[in-house]
Structures are given as C-alpha cells and as structure tokens.
Length: 556
Ligand code: TEU
Ligand code: CA
Image (cartoon, rainbow, N blue to C red; front, side, top):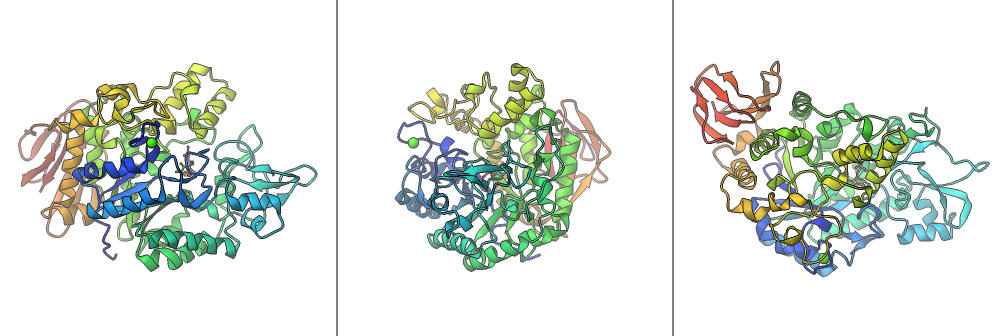
C-alpha cells in the first residue's frame, strides 16, 4: 500500500449553517469560518470539509444545488470563498468542499430548461419518463419517503426521478454530456486551490435499468432504493472516469460517502488506484437499522460497536485507509448514540474519542464533537427542520405510535441533533449569533461550551487536542498512522482493546466501556503510559485495574 500525504492528517467537518454567524442573521457563514481558522489550528486540524455552501433553495440544507459555480448569499460570496481557501493555506489547512452530483436542485437552470423542453439537450440531463396509463415507471421509494417519481412541472404526462427529495432531481450519469459538465465543474473548483472533495451519496449515480418494480417492503407498496442498487452494475466506470479526469490530475484528496458498495469491489474504491482517496466506514452508524424506519432501529451495544470497528480495520488492512467518524451532519451525536445516557460524562466521551483516534484510518471530527456536544431533546415536531426527520416522524405515526413516542424516536435519530448551532460560549445563543439562530441552540450550552473547556485542562476539548497531538508526535506517529490493528480480549463484554504495532513499536489501547472497574492482565510489564483519561492507572504494570470508562494507551 502506497503512503499518501494525507494519511497522517486530522480532518474536521463544518456544517456552515450552524458553525459561526458573523452578521447576525442567525445563519453561519464563510466569514465565520475564516474567523475561526485560528481555532481550528489550535485544535490541530489539517483538512476542513465544508458541507455545501453553493447556491441552493436549502430544501435539503444545501444538498440541493441550484448553481455549482456560486456561493449562496446566505453563506457569503465567491470572494469570501477565495479568501477562505487562501487564509486556510496560511494555517496549513486544506479546504475540502462537498460534491453533490447524484442530483441537483429543481431550481437549477438545467432542470428548468428540461421542463421547458423535455426532449431537448437538458431533458437528457435527467431521468424523465412517460407515464403509462397514469402510472409511474417503477415502485422505488425515495430516501426521504414516497415514490421516487414526481410529475414533471408543465407536463402531466411525464415524470422525473428523484432518489432523494422531489426538489432533488437525479442527474443522468449515463449521458456523457452531463458527465462532461460535472468534470468541468470539479476541475474549475480544483483550479481554485481546493484540496479536494467529499463526495455525496455517490453510489446512487448508477441505476439498475430499465426501470422495474421490486417486491414491496412496506405497506406503501414501495421498495427501498437499496434493493435496486444491489442490481446496479458498473458504477466503477463512472467513478474511474471521474478520478482520471479530475482528482488524479490535481492530486486531489477525495473521500466518498459510500453506502451499499459491493464487498468484492472494496479495493476498487480505496485501494492504491482507488476511485477515491478514502471513504467513510459507516458500519457502526448503520448497525441496527431496519427497513421499517427509525422507529424499528435497535440501539447499538458496545460489543456491536467494537465488532463493527474491528471488521472495518480488517477490511481495509493492506488495501487503503478508511475515514473514521463517530457522527456527521446526518447522524445523531456520537456520544448520545454510543454511550448510555446515564453514563454520559467527560470521562466516557474521552473514552469514545480514544477508540476513534487510536484505530487505523483518517479521523474526521464533526463540529462540536470536540467539546462533547450531545443530542437535542425535541419537544415538538415544529422544532425540527430536517426533511428526513419530518418523514420519519410520519412513518412512526403511521406505524401506530403516539405523538410523544414518535418525538422520542426522532429525538434519538434526528439529523437535526447534529445541526444545532456550535456552542462557543455561555453567552446568549451559545455565542453562535447575535440574532435568532435558524435552528434552536441546545439548551445545555451553559454547561457544554468551548470557552469553559478551553480553560479547563481536564476538558473533553483539551483531551481531543491531546489525541490530535499524539497522532502527530514523531515518537508514536508511525504506529498510530500505519500500525497493524490486532483486537484483544474480544471474549469480554464492554471492553474495547487492541494493539497497534509496527516492527519497532507496540501500543496497547484498552477502553473499559462500562461504569464498573475491571482488571486486565498483561504478559509483561508495559514500558510507559502514553495516554490516560484518568489521573492515574491503578494496579501493577502487569495487572491493571481500569475504572469505569477508563481509556489508556500504553507502550508495551
Ligand atoms: O446522504 C446520503 C444518505 O444516504 C443519507 O441521506 C441518509 O440516508 C440519511 O441521512 C438518513 O437519514 C447525503 C448527505 O450527507 C445528506 O445530508 C443529504 O441529505 C443526501 O446525501 C442527499 O444529498
Ligand atoms: Ca450569517
């Protein structure tokens, strides 16, 4: 496996709408990111992925792009973007943008022209089909609920395909002209000095054609899009072409948001000549999911979390580098998902962070994770903005849940958990804005905020800084970045332990993922402690007692 410049880096995801607002309109902006670059440097970040800030009606919060070549005025201007890229360089930070090319917005010029003339050039940029006897071509369900087919505006006899929201028409990648437009756009951005792209929902660009029904998996008579994806062959042809025409030319960093890849194709995705530099390991995020909807999801256990993580280490060993997350803008907060509510504390949050940072892969921190931000408790569906949450609320009601039960379900899973404004300080609105925030600030900001943690050497924030510094420490870097992962003591419940080793060095990572102490026995005394989320390690150098949620890294 070839070494790449980005392997030793640490990445950070910014959800711009909720990061920092500089003009008091309640919406985070690019100037807010520029202002916080010194903060990101202080934390130790090298790569920043910014969720979409292109022109957009924000139906899916920017994942519905109406102009790929401009910045939405709510986020700023192209001058701000140029300044951000240039300023970030001074801090040795590379900017990665979101590449959303499975679909665009129904307000994009291409789609408007397609509606004007479905048989013309732009009609072929989309999937536009004739209705047959008033029936749509197939029974696929959109990721956000309902049929993937919607009547084409102005043409009641025709319909267009949207795997996501109806305001997100799918682009037709089978059309070489469309692909050219996309590559031109990508290269235009890379020419500006971007470090690369995070690539959205990309597996969906290849459809199983011709359109046909699949067995219904819910009472709505529809079938989830994944059933179709399992039959779709040849996504690699598009991805390889995009790599060769764009990413390779600029030696750009690319990280794929890939779900539902075929296991035998894994190496094609992130091997030495992979379609992408890296891709996310979502196995813990999707664990326990159900076709029925969020209401039927199972809560994940520490053992399942461990199994997913170790499987990912094995899958990628010798092939490539996964990107590791505990959360992102589509997920509940990681600390709320992976730690039982009664056990939530600075200590347990540090324990979770230790696992993520000590495994092999590129760590991506999602904004607020570094201060241990938690899920929101929603008291009414009116507090929710996210289209996916609104759909799942209805799905739960349709399944017979009472409104308060449905609220509890979405509180556990909502994408808006991660989208509440960043908690900068204990000032009004968590110091995020001087105006009214677009989404309610989590009321726990008086306890959980950056300002207080900055001054506290024992804070979650300072622990994250330590983890990042450790990854870059010349004494341990090689092992932490490239060392082989070997799981340990997997017969014990709620213990996440493994070694990372190179021929020269072995680090033992042991995380007691429960509230009671436990003892672990080593074959030989360890050399020295490298990291510990407690003040000390009890026991001897061969028999250690780990306290509740104690996490240690030891050099053997
Ligand atoms: O997500 C793709 C995706 O599969 C998710 O929609 C996932 O199914 C969903 O979040 C579960 O609730 C990407 C983006 O990350 C997401 O924000 C967008 O909504 C989506 O693509 C469409 O662009
Ligand atoms: Ca603003």
